[in-house]
Length: 313
Image (cartoon, rainbow, N blue to C red; front, side):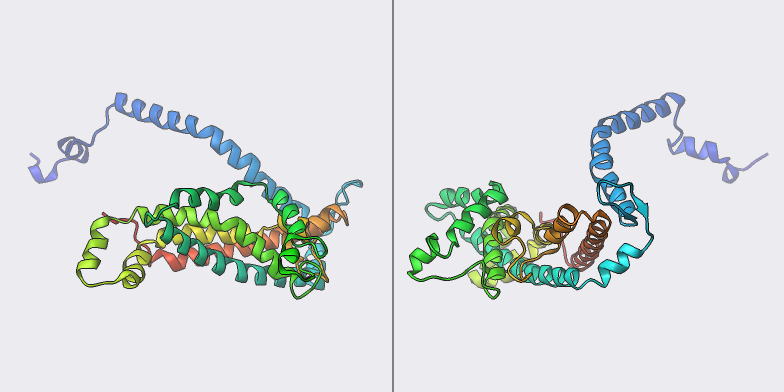
């Protein structure tokens, strides 16, 4: 005779209500299949338009191909050529400098604008629309407009200043001018998300800070900014990725010149592929850019992971 302490496992599971009947298992399986069926279009899009192109680019990085003759496997020759190429090294340095200028400035301006626009000041609704308009416009079209503004002879900026300044052909001014256009274009995007983050902060936390004697500046630094870390993480990740991949404005404004001062990596990939018809070398540059972006994103994730709270209720 067995004691109650030696009850067999199925009986224990039955006592706890954990035994699934065949009908329950079929229903669970049907629910799972239904979920995957709904996900299928998105999974197809991710696989066909994201993963497959990445795999093709990696494959091309080991090939020598000029779009006409058949691709020929060359191993690591393209990697050795690109990594020893001073032109690509210059493009990488220009891109890093470009990102180092654009990201802090547009993030600070976006946060400042969002703080003002969420205070309910007169005309806030109008300025919200104005800030977002450049971001939703075509970057190439905006680049053409800004090229006319920066024109040395009859450009709007020089006409306003009353003197001739070579904004886009002077090696000292070309990169800052392109940075200014990119910041002007993207600051509305940053402002939009910071506004959403600020409006999501519970009012009782702000009231508690005010009752503790915190002024507007202390309230911003010690209450609002820490609670904006999830928004800050999203804004920085997406902004860094888009800035590293900038091409349209550079192509429209300077074409990578003068003297390679605005020759960013994305533009160099384009010129290498569609002007030099060296798709193997261009693919290597794309792979290196991908590795850099993944590394920076992982570093940002590690930095924000222990400093971010998502529950504010």
